[in-house]
Amino acid sequence: MRQIFVRTLGGVAIATLMLGGAAACKQDSGSNSGDANKVCDLKIGFFGALTGADAGLVTPGKQASDLAVKQYNAKHSDCKVTIQPYDSQGKAELAAGLATNAVNDAKVVGMVGPAFSGESVTANPIFNQAGLPIITQSATRPSLSAQGWKIFHRGVGNDLSQGPAAGSYIKNVLKPQKVFVVDDQSAYGAGLSDEVKKALGPLMIGTDKATDNQNEFGGIISKVKTSGATVLFYGGYTEEASPFLKQLRANGWTGTFVGGDGIYDANMLKVTGQQDVEGTIATCPCAPATTAKGTFVQDFKTEYNADPGVYADVAYDLTNIFLEALEGGKSTRADIQAFLTSYNKPGSATGVTYKWDDKGELDLAQVRVWSYKATAGQWAPEQEIPKS
Image (tube, rainbow, N blue to C red; front, top):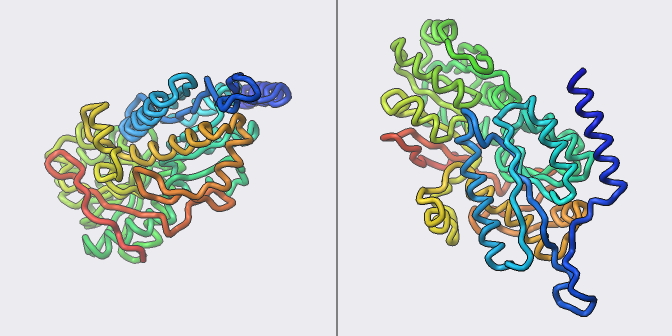
């Protein structure tokens, strides 16, 4: 009942906003001025887990978006743009309220995110109703593009690419005889694991499910050890993957732990500890941000005194796409949505050509999946996994 109430209020507010006009503020410089079409005092939203156990997957992207806007504002000091954060804490139950806040702010004309698939399922219908265009840098559940959301765009490949790639890596690089698969029952984790299972075929000899906030894994560990599996694929996030792996090691399991991009963050390394995490494999539909093109890597290091982390280069490019629209005088959500529909340019950091089909998916030719190995306390890029 409470969820319905929130959405109803959001719908009324959205309708009011749309009737009143969601136009952004254009700088009034006179009809003959070259500045007449400047778009000023607007906001680009950034939606994702900026705090909490899974923030390590999202904060590098937020830093990169901040960097893109800082660079833009340095060149447009009389007509600045702001990044507006929406901290979901990685909790889908917070997504509706945050999305409603975003669409009710007329100055928010584009959104980077949501970062996770579960929160996307809740937030995206609200964005779609308000016509607020979004580009997610990391929500990979394939079904997100099948909901008829006109505002949806994905800046990376989905799990129909990552799942088969992870399965291929396990079969052709690790070459085990037995694989056990566990997922956390989230929109992301379950979907990715389903694709991995298909790719593994008869190599998969057991499966089980974890739950959100689970911290004791004795029952699953017993099944893994009994199965004789030498590789375990985990579909889910660091918050549960880290204690699960630590307990596997404490119980004598010496196999290779493999996960998707949900574990490809600094927290998986730090919280798990080098001894237990060493040799873990993470797959990601993203190239190493530390080898991004142009000046991005050096600019990021100068700004934050650190290397760019997971999805930082992607978020940087996506933010710059929105900024390009604003620089070109696109002043409403509808203007920017139309701009994205016809967009077809490479990103300066990733080199990916951002061009979306009618469902908001990238051209498959632009999709890359990489493997990363936990080595001496760092995620070391290992290889781009060949497409099957």
